[in-house]
Image (tube, rainbow, N blue to C red; front, side):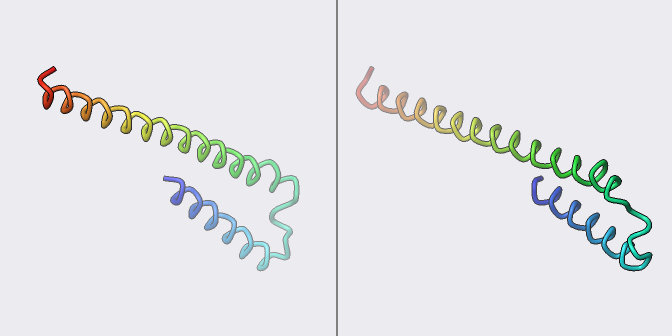
Length: 80
């Protein structure tokens, strides 16, 4: 998901660069950049942090489930 967002952002930036080269940067002002592109980038980073946090939680949950399964197997092996 993060990779797809990064690729989309890179394509948008490339398209803007091409348009700016063609039109001499008249079509996009610095204000437009900071109002449009920069917030998108910030949103992408917020999403990345959120996804990383969720991934860490999932990894913790997986470890907990794995440990619980091992505990049950030990109990079964020793006959409770």
